[in-house]
Length: 179
Image: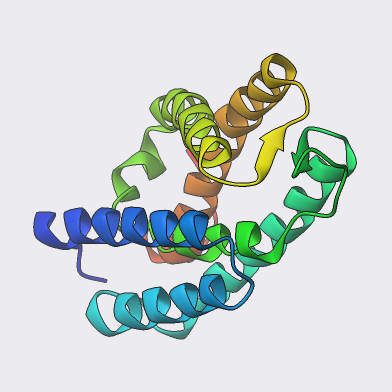
């Protein structure tokens, strides 16, 4: 599998950020899925890895759906100040994030410590920005940001490692190895 060019990696990151902003800004159960559809279509036509990547994206979406619901159920987040289920539009962020793991963030697949540091910091920054722009809020900002920081410090390198296993198993002689 050919490695992406720097322009493709940067474009993938830019496309993710545009889609993130559109989803958060819309807070819409209609617009957010349309943004995902457009994002994934552009991604697949430009630099996508075909059906294998679509399965990875779907898996990340399913995991994210469950995680978002768990975070709302545990009281980390509220919607309009009330306990709630996680809104669909919020879960639409997961498939667009999934498109970055073998492209914009591909170099982190072998640098899991750096991925953890970036995940902890980036997760906090992303959720802080998202809550300031939408009806989703932390039930307790200190507790919520601490939970998100710890969660993403573990989750981001785990997802990077999964992407390495999923997309580059041929480098390991067809076997899944992380080391």
